[in-house]
Length: 170
Image 1: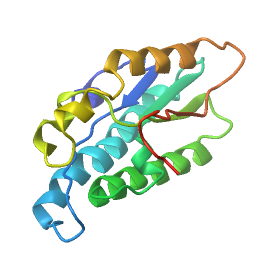
Image 2: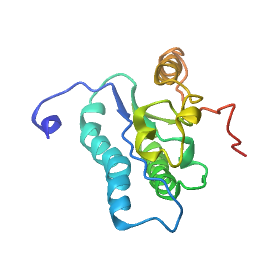
Image 3: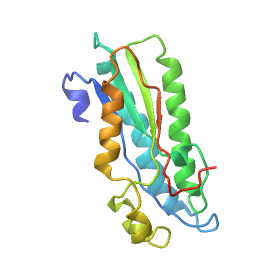
């Protein structure tokens, strides 16, 4: 990996990879698992592991931002693999936060609901274009994250949970 061959000053790592394969619990198969888990779980763990040595060298506060999804906190119908992978990412994030407590590295977990991106193109049986249009825009979500990460000089954001007005999240 390139990150291991050069010296970098990493001040913020954003883990935002994700793949969704939706269907009933009866639809799950090995190919779907091998598509979803590497991007979400392995990607987060490997990127973080490789970035940590560079982050801990910083004299300032640095952040690991994990874009987890509200699906990492709650189970949704037809999202069993996605929810399981996001829950694994959530568990890893909690361990990171625990092991990095007292260091210059802070872990921020972000839990958005649906975002209006092409993520949904291969899942039309689950989310229609009409429903997708009601989701938050990527720019709106990114601006909210950045505004909350860097606006408060004396505070460190821990979690940022997005609630969507069109979804029943209870």
